Amino acid sequence: MDTYLVARAVAEIGECLRVQDHLLATAESCTGGLIASTLTDTPGSSEWFAGSVVAYANQVKTKLLGVPETTLEQYGAVSEPVVIAMAQGALKALDADVSVAVSGIAGPGGGTPDKPVGTVWIAWAWPGGNRARQYNFQGTRDQIKGQTVMAAVNGLLGVTK
Image (tube, rainbow, N blue to C red):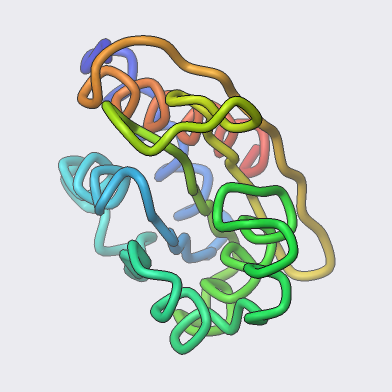
């Protein structure tokens, strides 16, 4: 992860959110709070960052973020419907205006032929809308987590401008 580029992008996101008087929330599974940590490395982030839910266990996804158990059972945790529900749940739970949610398989184990290690879904949500995208990252566990943070931040640039 190019920390300089990420820091510049986060500063730009923060400025956009601050000017719009909006708050950002995150819901993270495979990154385990790394997105929130990256965002709060920026001075002044308390003006625009509401908080994060690290929903590593499916039980947390359902209880704190409102992801329906049936959605988890039908599609699995690493899926478009689940990350969209996570992002929408983060908006509601943290009273935010914009959110990003991630769920994926960072490895080294846990992959399947349909969802190999490096498969990550990311969703961005705002009141009345959302978008999601699947990524197929390569590398070590730490590299996959870093690539996920970078993709989440890049997506936030598009959502907040």
